[in-house]
Image 1 (cartoon, rainbow, N blue to C red):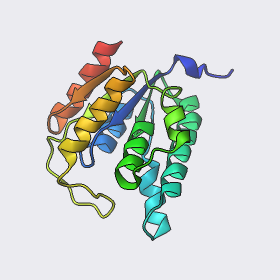
Image 2: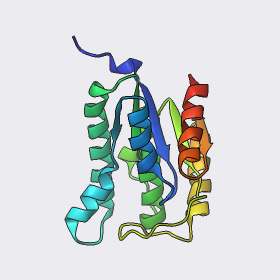
Image 3: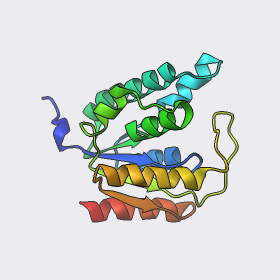
Image 4: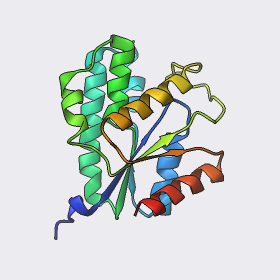
Length: 176
C-alpha cells in the first residue's frame, strides 16, 4: 500500500552557514524515527572542482527537491529538509544578482509546514565550502524577511548543543 505523503509534516531547516542545520536535521530525524534530506549542494560542490555558476545553483536546487520527493515516501510522520528553495533564491540573488524563475515559481508550491530558522549564535566552524563568516547576521535577517514574505510558519532556533536540539523539538511539539 502506498504511503500518503500529504500526511507527512514537512519541516525545513533554514539559516546562515555554520548554524548546525545538518546536525539538527540528522538528530531530529533520529529523535522522530524518520528521514532527513541532506544538503545536496555540499555533495555537488565537492564534485565539480571549480567555481560554481548560476546554472550549478539551479541544478542543486532541482536535485534537492527531487531527493526530498523521493525520501518523503520513506518518512514517518515528519520529514526534515536540510535546506530548501529560499536558501537557493538568496544564494542566487547574493552572488549573481538574479533569482531564476524556476526557483521563484516553486517556493510557494513547495512551502513547508514549519521552518526552523537557525540563529547565528554558534561559533563559526571553518569549512572549505563556506563563504560568509562575517555575514551570518545579515543572512539570518534576509532569511527571516523571506519567510515573512510568504507568511511561513517559522520558529527561531538558538542555543548550543543539546539545548539547541531541545529548542527545535519544543518548536515541533508546539506546532502540532
